[in-house]
Amino acid sequence: MSSSLQPPPPPLQPDVGDVGPGGPPPAAGPALSSRDRVWSARPWLAVLILIVVLGVGVAVGWGLRGAAVAGSNTAQPAPSPTVAEGERPAPSASQSQEPSAPPPPAAPEDLIEQLEALPSPSGNVPGYDRALFGQTWFDSDRNGCDTRNDILRRDLTDVVIGDNSNGCKVLRGTLIDPYSGDAMTFVSGVDTSVLVQIDHVVPLAWAWDNGASAWTLEQRQDFANDPRNLLAVSGELNQQKLASGPASWLPPNRAAHCAYAGQFAEVLVQYRLSMPDDDEAVLIQILEDC
Image (cartoon, rainbow, N blue to C red; front, top):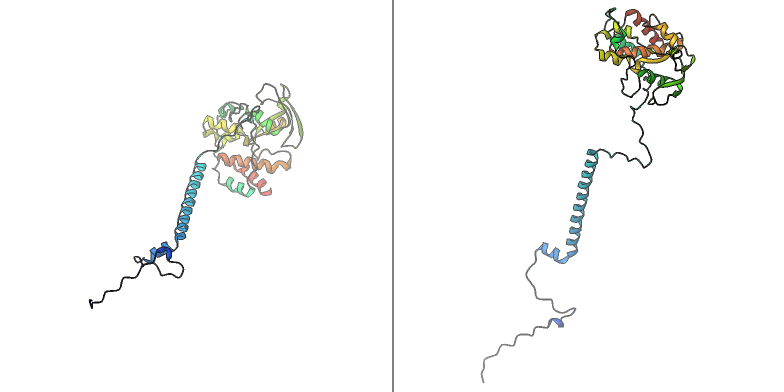
């Protein structure tokens, strides 16, 4: 019988299936870093971060797309409106349209200051001729109508236009004469058209002496057909006025003096014409009283 002691057998390892609540802890594996423990313990955190990253990317993408669309809309002209079947597009502004009424003059004090800054008068200039202001009633705005009929359509009421005249020829109408305030009936005809005439507020011969003689023929023709310097008036009063400046002639209706002086001054300033001292004194006096 041997006296040496035999080592006890190793303890049995329990089957995994035998370990329940309260059973021995599983064998320790390799040590985890703190970051690995977070990802291991909370997998939903990774999902949340992925959702946030994707959301930011989508938002940035839509922002860039919106900016590109906005830039494209700014750079591209708006499409032309379509015309429905059976409709006709509205005529352009240049098709048989009368010129707009002259704009209201500037404030009298501003006009006086501008008049005083005009060039000094040079005196009478020989050689005036109406032909030096180009074709009479030239269609300078290229609307297909001569200037006389443009102004008649603008200044008359109850206008009747002739057939087959491109909407231009005024046959009849009513004029409230701006110089007298009287109502007049206009009828186109050999003996009647002359009763309503188109006045150059700043007369052509007067303008010739005060700077227009130095212009080109084209510039003078434009001046002679400028609606800002034209009014439909009584033929009788237009013949009384002729080439007079404000010192020699004013509308018989005193209520019209402010409008007449303002329009006269506006044309002078626009064309940088000079003005004799007596005309300047009368014009400034009227403007001061307006």
